[in-house]
Image 1 (tube, rainbow, N blue to C red):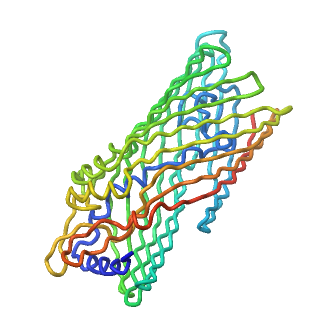
Image 2 (tube, helix red, strand yellow):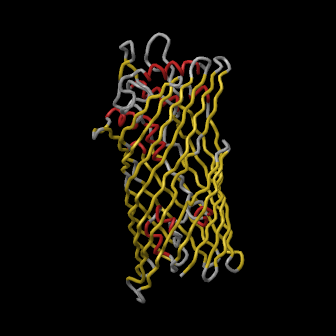
Image 3 (cartoon, rainbow, N blue to C red):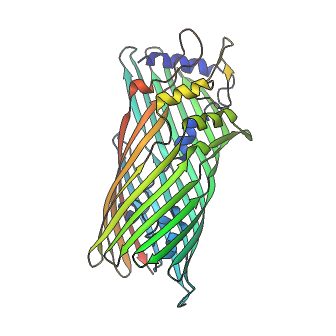
Length: 446
């Protein structure tokens, strides 16, 4: 692996007069900022693998179907703590879910029987990447570290008609924080690229549920695209010489369509099946109030529709004690690295947005100045238990996340030209990552 060329590529890029600009707004970056972990929520929601869109009664499920909060009969206030760790040694402790749900009985025997109001906070994604590579041939190392997450505050209203039809709407205010450090070292160079990304956005959720029988409920939900306004700052250090800059831009995430099926066996058991899809070819980015056309073309060439399937069950053991288990899988939202590189190289640049520049010799090139990850399939295996009394409840859940990525490293300069060539993703191969969530929820009914 000719990782020794990485430092040369970085130094050549650093000499560019407009190094910041839009060169780092590329398909892989937008994809990384748009993805979500589908099982995060309260411990009950997580324990069932997030498959509660049709079961309802849990405020975390409104992100899948806004009508779900009307399917319960109790008001409650809850709080969830999440202890997170991964195989790379990262660890964090956060509040991953908080909710205030009011269920209002209209005291009608038919028609508009009840409604629900909810204010929720939910963690949608935890960034958890840490890669270290060592090249013995060139005595060089590359360390790539990411941390942060995305969150949402939702304001929702839902209604219950005849205990058979349920509808709901929600407004979501989203928050994004992403920090990345990419360090390259060899005998001659020390390059450190540090980037801090903060953003805010907004989306809308609508949902419908239909209950044809006492034991079955079906539903559909739609979440509009989220438009993020991003403020990004970076620091680029080459052998102790530092360059700093910041720039704003916008990203547009894809719409989410979901469908749910739930089975309720009295008070004894619940079984949920949720499906959702997102077409990531519909993403786009905007810099200086201009849509990036080449970026859009790249996205349409290499991204694809992601399908997510969630299944979960809970069984009442005795009294208020429930046991839960769940599984979720997300398909790859992008082509394999080798195929993707061939397609976008044909378009004129492996990671280009609408940006090109010239180095100190007056020759043009495309490319990033740090690495990206190309996500593949993700799996979530969960289990949990909980106890619910007349007034209080407590739940515990464990999630094991298994993911596969391909690292798209800084690109070396070809010896004969200054054109940046394909990545080493295929040489490095698939990288397996594992992470854990230990979640504890408690709350009160009223």
